[in-house]
Amino acid sequence: MIEEPPHSAPKLQAQPQNPTRKTAWSGRFETLPSEEVERFGASLPVDKRMWREDIDGSIAHARMLGSCGIITPEEAASLIAELEDIRTNIEAGTFTPKHRAEDIHMLIEAELTQRLGDLGGRLHTGRSRNDQVATDLRLHLKRRLTDEHLPLLLDLRAVLIEAARSSKKIILPGYTHMQRAQPILLAHYLLAYVQMFARDFTRFLAAREAADVSPLGSAALAGTSYAIDRQMTAAELGFSAVSVNALDAVSDRDFVLDALYACSVCQMHLSRICEELVLWSSTEFGFVTLDDSYATGSSIMPQKKNPDFAELVRGKSGRVYGDLMALLTVMKALPLSYDKDMQEDKEPVFDALDTVTDSLHILVGMLDTAHFHKSRMRTAATRGFAAATDLADFLVQQAGVPFRQAHEIMGNVVLYAIKQNRLSLEQLSLDELRAFHPAFNQEAMELLDPRATVAHKTSEGATAPVAVEAQLTKSQACLEADKKLL
Ligand code: ARG
Image (cartoon, rainbow, N blue to C red; front, side, top):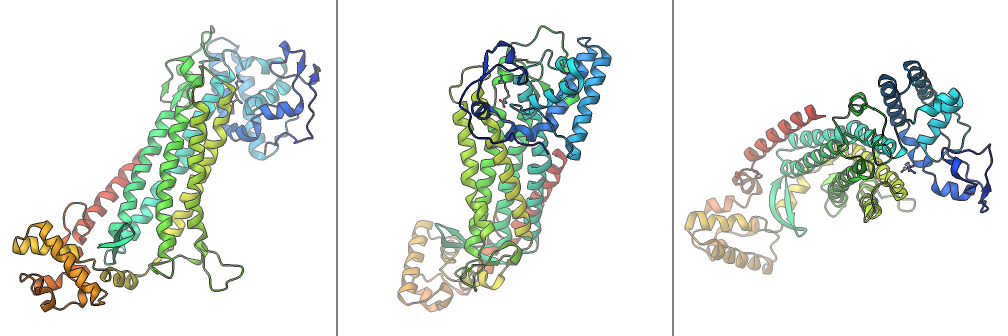
């Protein structure tokens, strides 16, 4: 599409001023940076991804200049037509600029000037690259969050809700400290992630809102003496508001950090569910089988099926956090207003946005095709004394035993069972239980079935089928409401 500048051998010598190598600022210079130095300062390889937004921003600016009488309506119309033509060329893959340019803003302006002569040079009236780059980046983030992250999070929640709906009868052990704790419904587990991804949606929405302010017309830092109409450009570009302070508008990148933070938390949530898919697909757990299309084999061990993609999503949290840290560090202690350091904002945010988009995509497909193993989960739920808390609760509720005392009694029961080499409380007889407390009866024995344990957890947000049904209704309603916010 847009070619990167050629990566030629370093030329360390500064180059004398040469009329064929003009830049937008070369008027004040006697020598120009060497090609190597120039390349070091260039951001085109990264910011060329903002070409759409740069053209949109320039068109809005040109139209406003024409409408405010700063250039003639005919001049505005020519600029707009030529910018549209450049857009068509880029889209068609026929854009072959001849100029070396520092960034996408300079490249498009240089192309415009080559095509239109002096008129091209009028576009930058009342504008600086400082407000231009901030405008482009805000538009770019808004577009990508709207087209990628927000809808993908809706898809992921829909897949998880669907999986929860079809797994209402599956019981597995819930864990704390990676030790079997209490039996829960698989639907209860899946709906926990739905909550996390619903909050991620809200974080991305907030990041989009933070980006939704127009800096265009702030010029370099002080505003401009031209009678521009900032409301007009903001409205044309679809911004909800106009920035209040020009100095802030060109130096603020906290809207980028908001997006990076949303990406980091989302990738952290993804890493947790992926970690569980990795563990659960091991022979040791055997709770889930990932579809072959989301696994790879080993080049040496023919029997292996590796959950590579879940691992990779987990691993990619490192780079997303790194992206957030990189920009926080770039911005720390930067004096107002624009400093070239800020050019380092795009690479991390593009990387984080790409990584989260890809990861969300992968996970939607992986979960949609995963197979959960009911009997393995159920067996695991009965092993490991998971009913101990319920029997303690039984003593509290049926025999008025204080909970601490009931806890101690059940601790003794578990210790006894372990010493007797029993794998679960189900393997104890009623007489054996009675030796620890006379209140134990047939009803207590029924609690040893994980289905009964689960059925008793009916409090709001709990794991009983009736409580999970309520969670499903709420999760679905929240999903529907969020769809409307997109
Ligand atoms: N390429 C620059 C960036 O990404 C554009 C802004 C340049 N402004 C300037 N005053 N040098 O930050």
